[in-house]
Image 1 (cartoon, rainbow, N blue to C red):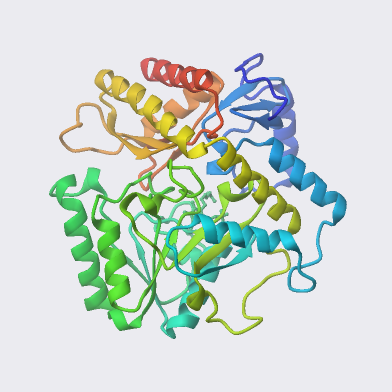
Image 2 (cartoon, protein in one colour):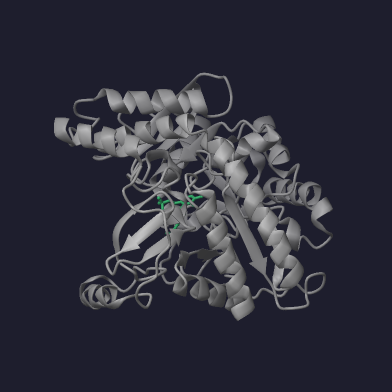
Length: 447
Ligand code: PLZ
């Protein structure tokens, strides 16, 4: 566990003077297109705390966007990655292989849903994993079309920009995008016109009808969905939706891909979010939480699908880097040892209880949703709880800013920019969790 004291401490303005100095240097040399949620420069981080260069300690409700589930300096991650650094940093798995890569693939076969034979390939980023899932599905099916969903997010590379729903900031001005990508509705319960209780059945019927009519099921290589949609607003597809889409894929020889890059590895209180409705994907993409902060991503799935591309057809210089693999083995060990699925469930219980009480008082909270330590509130114009549900992005921004000033790091998301999301490290102490929620409650009162 990290040496960073697990206590919030605000000793300067946020950002403080040293951060502001670094920010000026950054502005001079770092490309303007690369943003930061909160320009406090990090000195060290671990557990549930980020310490900045001015000595402030922030409570972390972001985990570097759902990455540091085991903390940003987990003992097993640091120990194993450090040992690997001493031995060798790189050989390239495509040149001379090493055991760590194989061990990570063994763990993925064990932990992902389904008891069929599984294989994996390792990459560097989530987007790269999604791109490779498409390559593999196309090679296996010899079809081209890819179906994705409203509010979906899959990355910023050219193909994954095409798969991602939202224009600003991800796609604007960056086209043309890859062809043969088709978008269909998702069961967004809170905003489904005939009500959440109908969303699962109606949205799946509409999606399937669109695929049949506009694409032709026999042309579809892959259907890709996040079992809990992340950047799009922490949308849990209404019950029945995922099983219906998964069954449609199976019935039509389409590769069903669960993008668990944000929702996977204990984040929702299960190893993978698709387990919640017993869905067994053909392929599953993982990244973020898998390696405790080191860059690693994977595609895992049915052996016969994974083996479809020709030898040498998959790869990349750094994919499955040995230090990242060592980090992943440390992170997975930590998840098992500390029962981080149990911890995530406890975080949900605490958060949802507190958020429900806040919703009684502050009617800008239109919806509370998510699972485990992937929880969000959707903000709407005051007084529209049962009415217009007009998205209130200004409230999300103002709340985030107020929290940051008090030393609580929170992130926003959502197609309409009106969702405040909470992604604490799963190892966060319950005192810090509650203190973070106190700050949030204070922020509501303040705005
Ligand atoms: N699939 C489901 O959540 C990354 C994006 C942050 P990379 N989400 C955070 C940003 O603004 O760039 C993500 C995801 C899902 C794919 C990705 C892409 O993963 O590792 O960022 O490429």
